[in-house]
Length: 287
Length: 333
View 1 (cartoon, rainbow over the protein chains, first blue to last red):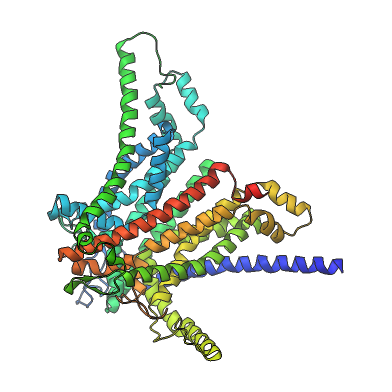
View 2: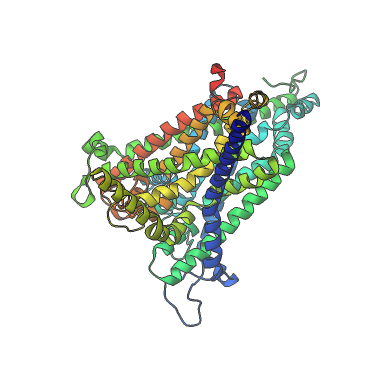
């Protein structure tokens, strides 16, 4: 009798373990399906030419690939995300330094908290905020590469800030104390010892923020808007990769749909590659 | 304050040093406070931009079921309902799956299995929203239309016949795109969030909790249920709320699969719109009317307030967990 009941409990244990394993499988099916379909559909159009050629308009022209390319959108993405990084990386790293090195008080904790909360605010709302701010201060630049960069920067700042803070917190206090014992001024201890020791986490945070920005669409629709020629000036609308995927995927032209898959594949490869690299870099450092 | 930076005498170099030290701290402080200012500006700019709409409609915008910008009829009710429905579907699907994943990865398997699987689940979070949208259009929508939706419809119809009722949940024309499909895609997108934070909550449970249950002869699952899950309850609730926050604000994937119909959905197969997808899909065609632009900004403000409230609540739960180094039920044990 007792043996039987134990047996039942053991079987139940296995059943639950099996169910939990099925949950993992259920979550991985969409991931594998996304990667598989992107490779199958995007692989057809992928070539070096696809990366540099001008955009297709959905019909075939003699002598040119029907799928066109994503050259202008890729260049515009690099430029706009570059400007956004130029704004957000120094801001985020300095704020992160404050939070980790000086901000062990009520102000620091509340800034950390609100930065965390800001990470959760929807990107479309950030887009509308930047749009509304530009309309208020400089309406002519509301739809421009500049407003697009600012929107992406607002999304990136909290990510960089929080990872910098967390990265620097991992640096052992003994290093700081050692530096002080040698009479090194605090600012130099922070920059040369703490920041350079926690470098890999800070870089990971920056990379994550850049990847997030490179795949953004919603805020860009309301700020950078769209431009068939990619980037034509900081005060002109700009056409980036994310919005290109959105518009091409919804178009009736099979060539544009194929181009959307090609661009998606490039984004996926970048994301997966970089998140894998970030993971390996982090593990080397901290485990 | 300047620990270790004190030097005797008031030489020029010591003053310079102190000035540099203070200057650097001041700089980082100014930037950190700047972030707080940015968040304040965020809210103020949206409130200012929504002035026109708030003055004209006030809060009644939220209860009005009609959206017709050309006639200056601007009600957000269909979109609020769309947001609630899609988020609810997402949670119903994602919460059990995510808890199962978290339990499997942190309780039931050795590290060499849980590490790669955990990493794969987290990869799902790295895929950009628009790519979920593309996948949704070409893979998920056809799959829902041919397989899932007909099965659910059959089930709903026989349920109605059996009980002589007319429940319109899985009924109406099957289009593939719609509220249900949007909920499914949201579920896939929030699984990594909920499962990762739930795993952290489970990891924060002291090892003695497990050992005590195992020592009394419990199986792994019994130990998890009795001593781990109840202990980590608050952390898991925080994880679910954070997932909800992500689902409510998610934009592109939903915009691409929900069908973009500005009416209250009549069933889960019907097309609809969430607040976020309304802004993404319609703002550019309507913003030239100042009143409509203002109504969009008021919609964004509503969305921001909802997500901020959700996030503040969740962070408080999760922070408490991290700060105490343990989950909820500590006082019950």
